[in-house]
Image (cartoon, rainbow, N blue to C red):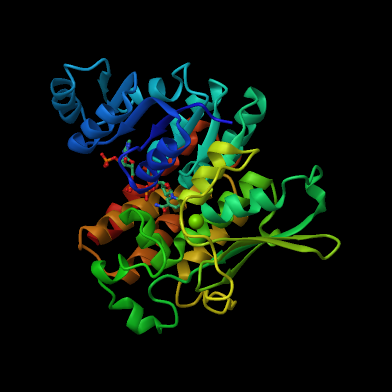
Length: 383
Ligand code: NDP
Ligand code: MG
């Protein structure tokens, strides 16, 4: 069980819920990091008294250093400082709750330092899954997923020593706010519409990914990497209620599922307490009052991002890094209200067509693919 954590992305949705769980479990914090949320970081640093606080924005870090001058917390600025935070010796677990590919290098640094990784930052596995999983094997670093679907699968496969027993993983998907709408209607949806998720409150990037179903596409790739399974063993079903968090079908036909209220503090707590279970102070699931559980196939025509992700997964190499980089850039444009909703998938498809795929890539080739994808999106946007 975890005693001391470092949280990369502590001011975000997952980061804040992680600190809430940490407080309940009586865990200490060694390092906290964020991008530029000075006030929130000051408040967290005063509450958790970490040895190190990092803001990747240099000016914000200077401001934070002035504010925390009366404390024992050391403040560092810049993207490179994330690696130092990730490898701090006193932490046994590093929670990766940074959004986007920015989480890749620090996750690798934490793995190299032999930490347990409570992994929320799915983009890292999407872009560099093989590299990350191989590094974890080599360094003996345990990766415990925080993403609710992958935590569900992780819980279902506890005690399954031979992964060949797994026939198929079934990821559940809420369908997002535009479920059931026609393509023409979906195309008119605004930033505000996309940010209204029916079941979860999350950071803006993942909330948009849920609306396009790119999130489920990224999660298919995340599951393939975590369990080293091919695409045809990872399925997606729409489950509007977000109560069944995912399922595993074994080769004898048994299907195991994990159920719970839609509350990220549950998978976060499990990642902290694994292989044990902590006590959940929140509302328990009541089967007699919860809505009927329904399942349906996803609509890959109206939501092409899921298909684009599956195609990238099939192609392998840097295809997923290109997909992810293009999606990050396109979602940024959508959040800035510079493109409409349907343009996200179009720009991702344009970048995938424009950037060549490299097989068996190095870290540098993966990061180059990410950059090329962002440039391809910028070029397609300006056309
Ligand atoms: P948020 O946007 O709420 O938080 C992101 C965090 O990362 C903030 O602390 C932010 O700091 C920091 N950050 C942003 N950009 C950078 C950067 N370039 N370098 C370093 N730090 C940065 O995101 P979420 O908490 O929603 O998501 C975090 C990760 O967890 C994502 O990968 C997401 O897919 C995954 N996830 C999230 C779930 C959820 O319920 N939210 C569920 C499952 C997975 P600042 O505040 O200063 O901007
Ligand atoms: Mg998820």
